[in-house]
Length: 52
Image 1 (tube, rainbow, N blue to C red):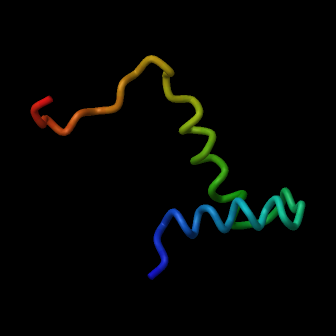
Image 2 (tube, rainbow, N blue to C red):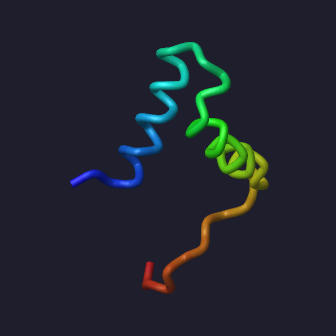
């Protein structure tokens, strides 16, 4: 079974292996990577409400 992480990792790998900045699948995913980088550094991830 292939997971979403496998698909994302392959597209990043292929873009850099082929040295092709116009690789269509990577260019569609790239804005999502940029949005992740813009998250505030001091913000903590949401908790699931478990005891700790």
